[in-house]
Image (cartoon, each protein chain N blue to C red):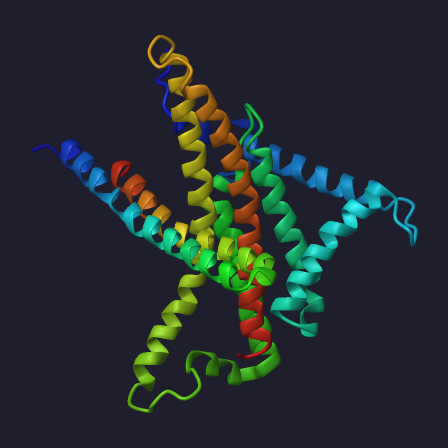
Length: 243
Length: 74
């Protein structure tokens, strides 16, 4: 009998083993869920816009709602200069949102609970922000590390502190999403174990708690996708409009 | 004492990190209630900011959970 632990749900199971020159590129259950997520997103938007009209049908209006949400987010945080970043922020938001929500389905796999996936997303944002900053402002971009009006004796310390804050951004961004997803799903598994095993004592208690926790976890999934995206917009604002 | 039992003690002590997160989130929402009471017409924008702030503050509590996982599994 296998040892049932709440951490078994995060194991990677290879579905199609592929190996290139000694490295493992297998198609795992994580890859399968990511593929399903990409198919869902593409299918939704291409089906909603298959006959675009100025007065939208209901399906088109729902796609326009999502587009409008991201457009407003970029407009508020970055301003008109943020328009070129629309595809990036749109893709990041939808990928994280649908990945998180697919993790809530029974017997499915939460892709964003692995730190490597969220770290790659955060490093993508970090590299894009840094390169955009250097391309737009040249070496003047380094004035980001010295806030306006610091006394000159404090400047070296401020630069070191601001540099470390800047470098901690991808770590905190990725860790927040991965830890939220992992902790939420571990909690769900632990309470689910109680639902079955507490059948004789306090019988009606664990099941309503389980239902409430699933609802809360869906809320946290959507909220964490939104927070990741809005923090990416804030970091873009730092790079595009220096303060 | 053997290593495994010390690890368990350490993991149990890291749960005190959640205290800071709980205080932080409570403080954010108390400020939200105050602000909505003063200016009910800005309530939607304030709520959006409050949820973002709560997500950020909650992350710190979850970092302590990550340290607990690291301690017990390595």
